[in-house]
Image 1 (cartoon, rainbow, N blue to C red):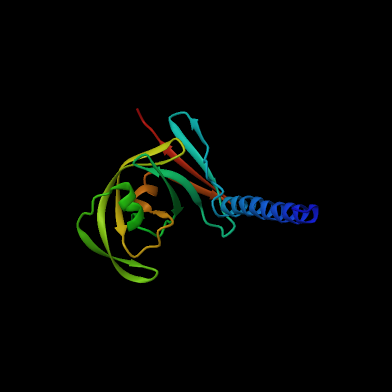
Image 2: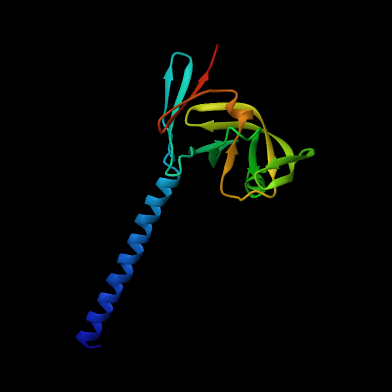
Length: 170
């Protein structure tokens, strides 16, 4: 192989490597913009557990948390009555489908299935026995963290920060 071919190969390989590294880097940057709370921090104030979230670029509060010990991404939604789990995530979590019901969504009426989550956690904040709905018509990316969970914590929004406070009384 001539040195010219080797040089052309090396340039092509460097270009491909550069594109690959930029894809990884900018993918992480975009993921961080979409979910700036991938590792939410917690603090303890007396008997309270406090988690502070930052709004994303669209001014939504998205955070990584867990359901029944398994990692999920939550979109906080005070307009949702329940925690709403897309069917694909519900299957991964092995959530049992309970009684069918109808729910009104932004896209109209849908059939949902009742379930109960053993635990819902964000940082060190954990809620037990949380009512939820499984929605087969929902996009599979995020779980809506609705009022069946949020009504059990105090939340205060200031600017682009949302503080969640769970009071644990002995």
